[in-house]
Length: 246
Ligand SMILES: [Zn+2]
Image (tube, rainbow, N blue to C red; front, side, top):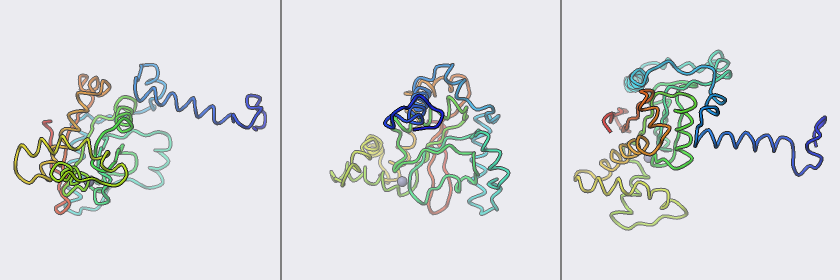
């Protein structure tokens, strides 16, 4: 029970619990329907002023610097931390794989507050991921979405094994890689190294689907406020290959 609080006479319905529930409800609304009043209420004071083209240029330059082992210029110090505590204005949504070798901030030489990251094995987009991306684009005003696949992706390899060998996996791993199967089927019809082709196909298809299945992203695209691109990271050479024409 809380001091000076008459709304929670019993401990089964704490004050904070109600507040969290309400805030959570607003969050869900903002991530799905995004009516204008909710967007205005949830939007931070400042958004990035970068255009989609500027944002992509920064990502390309960052990867170039990483490959050349240039000293990182990313601002991660106390001053930057204090600035960010007042609000975030990231310039890129990065949809990437959970693989420990594909850490977005490192690959692109970025610092605190710059990348809004969604990660899971196989860089797919489910409802939680889509809501996160829509929040970044629709509420935070992020001008770029990058869907990043990578060389030798284990999740894509698992989807290849499902297609080629009817493989099964423990727990819900099989269910998790199921959305990658159409990319493998598409890649198989094209010939070449099936795993590599599937990685590219998966990144491109996920990016394309964002542009066709999300009203929030579609609206931002129509207004010229966002770009959505696919990409593929090479584990050995550190290079990101861009798929801008999805
Ligand atoms: Zn992976």
